[in-house]
Length: 126
Image 1 (cartoon, rainbow, N blue to C red):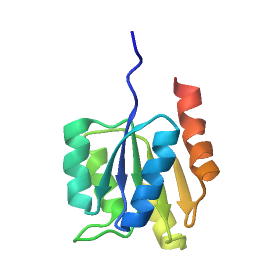
Image 2 (image 1 turned 120 degrees about the horizontal axis):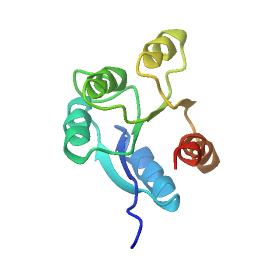
Image 3 (image 1 turned 180 degrees about the vertical axis):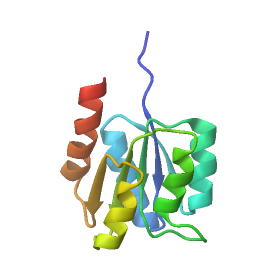
Image 4 (image 1 turned 60 degrees about the horizontal axis):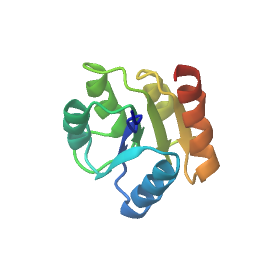
């Protein structure tokens, strides 16, 4: 019986970064649902596909940012989240903590940065 791939949703409003993270995650063996640029779409997608991981930018298109989107997702899911953001200021870091993130990475990130964050969680929970 083949082991089902873990699903990840990528929420990033920069298309080039979105594609980069998608390639990183696929190299790590994940099935990705990318090209999400709105917090509202991220919430709807999380409800629909019940992902194993969310990779979330904080600054997004639309009315709600990535932290607000995760707070809404937390109402129905404990899915782990990794924030990848250019916002490393204390205000955003503190707000992000409310969602109990797996990690908070500051752009630019490399493949190894994401790999380490993911391994922290999935190696201890597999």
